[in-house]
View 1 (tube, rainbow, N blue to C red):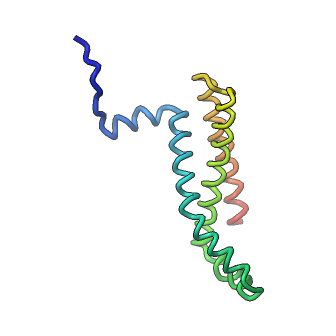
View 2: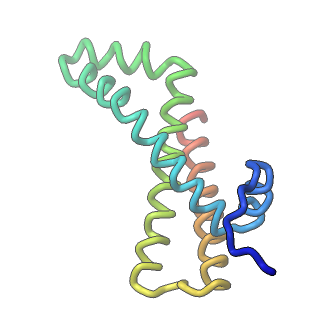
View 3: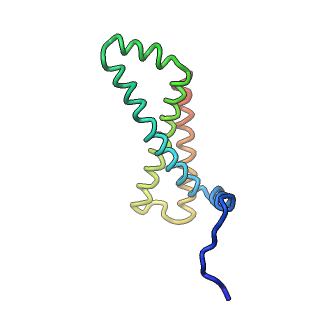
Length: 130
């Protein structure tokens, strides 16, 4: 007799199934990028507040805070999350109106979103660090 009871899968089994699907990868990355953006917004708002206080504080932020390699890396991480979240959000909005809803077209749209986001993230890297 076939049982219809749910089966508990280990984390390794879940990852082995999900990491083969570009749709699942795009969905997981969309959630992670949203979390990154959410967590880094307060830090960037603080930097914005410091830079808008006076011309001297703007010069301090420009020279000392943005001159730091670690801060530049955090800004790149924020921009990377924002770029991916934006691109994947557009993909999800298009799917909501009926574009790329099928299995194959959804896979192609997910791959396209990942590739477009990677290109944007690389452009942000060159813009911030070079």
